[in-house]
Image 1 (cartoon, one colour):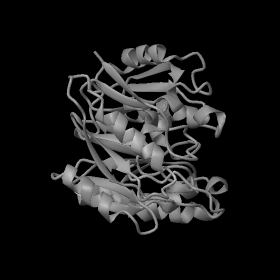
Image 2 (cartoon, one colour):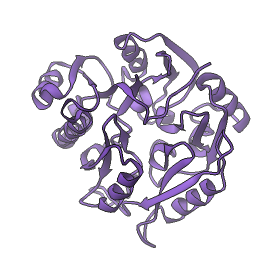
Image 3 (cartoon, helix red, strand yellow):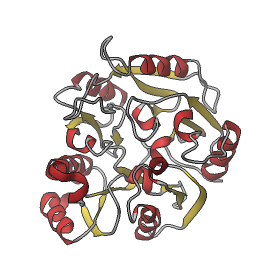
Image 4 (cartoon, one colour):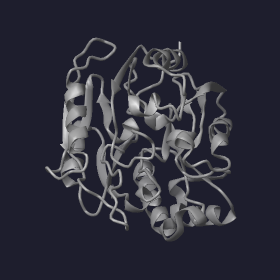
Length: 328
C-alpha cells in the first residue's frame, strides 16, 4: 500500500532549484538567489539538518550556486523551467518510490520547457522507481498528515483548467488510488490573485496528526479577510481519517502585501518548509515575528527561522513551493 510520510518525518534529502533564468526573474534574480541560499543554509543547519540537493540549469547557474552555497548543498546540473519543484517534482513514498503527475503550467498559465521533465529527472537522480500517474496534480495543491488524511481546495482540484472531467468523487478516487489516502477534506477558495488557483500550502498545513495551522486576518482591511475566516471555520468542523476532530491553530497573516504595481500578491506564512532540524518560515517586508513565534510553539524540537521571501514571491511562491522532501 502506498504511504506518503508527513513532512515532519525524517528526510533523506530536500530537493530544490537554483534560480537560473534571467529572462524570467529579471532584476529579482540576484535577490531571489540570496533568499534561496539563505533557506538552503537554514535547512542544512551546519550539517545538523537536511542534505539539500540543488538543481542548477546552465553553467552560469552552476557556478553561482557553488559560490553562494559552498558546503551547504550538493549542486547538480539539470534542466528545468523554473524552481517550483513542489509542483513539478515527484512526491516520494515511504518505501522510496517517486510518484509523478502530469503538469500543465497551473492550468496553462505558465508553460516552460523542461518543467514536465522535473519529476522523472529528480527520481532518476534519487535512484527511485518512478511512476507517472495519468492526471494533472501539483504538490502544492495537497496537504497530507502521513496517516491517511489529505486537505485540498475545490478551486484548484476541480478547476476545469486541470482535469476538466473531475468531480469531488472522481478526484477522491484518483487521489486515494495514487497516494494511499483514506479521507479527503475539501476547502473552497484560496488567496486573492494566486495563479495556482488556491493551493493549500498557502492556506492550511498539518503540523501534527489531528492538528492544523491556518492564518487569521491581520486586520479588517486584510484582502483575504473573509477567505481566512471561512477556512478556519470549515477546518474546525472537520475530522481526519482516524476520526479525530481537527485542532485548529491560527497565526496572523502578513496582511496586504503588494507588488510594484500596487496589486495584492499571495503572501502567506503557511508556505513554510519543515526540515529535519529547522522550520523555515517566509516573512515579508519585516513582518512575521508573531507567526514565527506561533510556529515555534508547534515545533518545540526544531529551530524555527523566519527569512525574507519577498524576491521569491515575485515569481509566485515561497519556500514550500520551491522544495520537495525525500523521506528517509
